[in-house]
Picture 1 (spheres, rainbow, N blue to C red):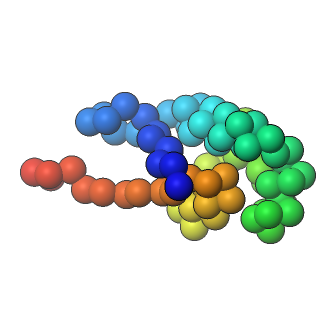
Picture 2 (cartoon, rainbow, N blue to C red):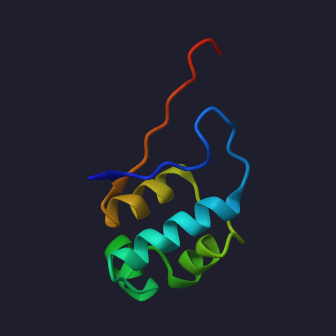
Length: 82
């Protein structure tokens, strides 16, 4: 399983465009269409499209489901000292 790193390590993540690009790239690397990903995750095609274009921010559970279907994982960790 791969780990998708979102944003630059050590910086706060505020850029939805980066997340959208990562999800789109992972999907394309797997040779999947949005329709394929929808069938795999049970997430509506329109919602996946909005997420991939940065027009919708996915909930954590939705993001985890998408990443799992793409062979990646979501890791959330607290920075030391915060």
